[in-house]
Image (tube, rainbow, N blue to C red; front, side):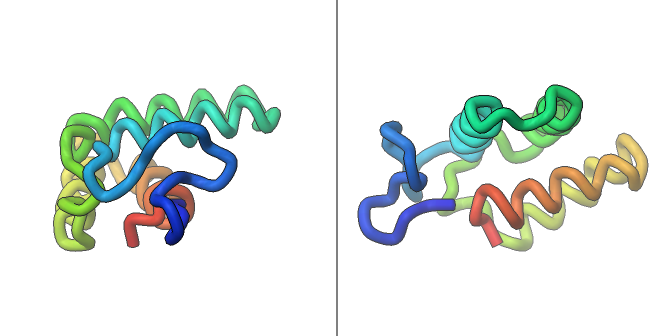
Length: 100
């Protein structure tokens, strides 16, 4: 999630803010999860999901990633890859990217 004081993610030295691309924030988050010792299986699942998510919203900037756009992207992922792929991106965006 973005810090309200300087736009950086807590514990991050990288600059992130409303002009950052969604894909950049996801990559930063995945790197932090790996550093924190998250399970390799979990990381593999998130990376797989991230490849699908990037196709739909990876180029968008955080300020452009509105709930309506994210909902449209998640629906597209569900339609293309089945409902089991919807859970991971929606949880990931909601809980870790601070997009909703």
